[in-house]
Amino acid sequence: MSLDLLSIYEHATFLISIKKSFLQKPYFYTSRSSQMHQNLVAYIHRYVEMSDTEIEVFNRYLIKRKISKREHLIEAQKETCTARYYIVKGCVRLYYFDEKGNEQIIHFGIDNWWISDYESLVNQLPAKLHIQAIEDTELLELTTEAFEQLSKKLPKVERLFRIIMEKTTVAFHNRIAYMLSSSGEELYTTFINANPGFCQRVPQYMIASYLGMTPEFVSKVRSRTKNNS
Image (cartoon, rainbow, N blue to C red; front, side):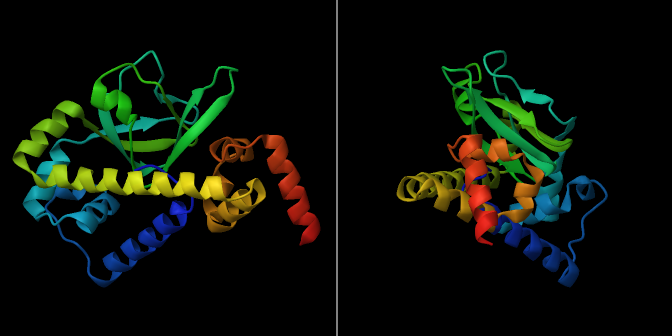
């Protein structure tokens, strides 16, 4: 799932609800299904109902991956994306280089989100986006082949990822609309205030790139904010 403007706050609220649900009514699974991260189980149940047996089947198709800080999961033009990735723990960015050689970040992915270069994945063409870890990151990989096999066994999986894509598209449209209707200072201030925890994990220049601003502009906004406080 992509990270779009203001949606980090909604994501944090969801994580709190997950923790409460496990404290109030723990989930119980067999030894095999218990290998699936509990937040992923809760994430799945948020959108579709799956039995313990179905969770076990889903879990068999996931591959554990780890990437270190600054390591690339996908490098643009060098690879074709062949999987969807669930972030168990960590943070990644999806970015490209413009014609001037500047990095342009279009998405972030954080704990308990699905990420991928969907254009490359769907069309099976070389990736246009780099996917790089901002922190040491743990992932669960669902390859295209595994996804197709799993979907035949569990049609609910297709519904799950359809819902994810629909929500991602809505969030992206809302982000664009908000960016077009707000001043740069309003945009930055709203984002920072809504996502304080996330903004401590990511360098300011990356936030600037994601919001379509220069680091110099962000520095001026931060200075004005400090002077006014």
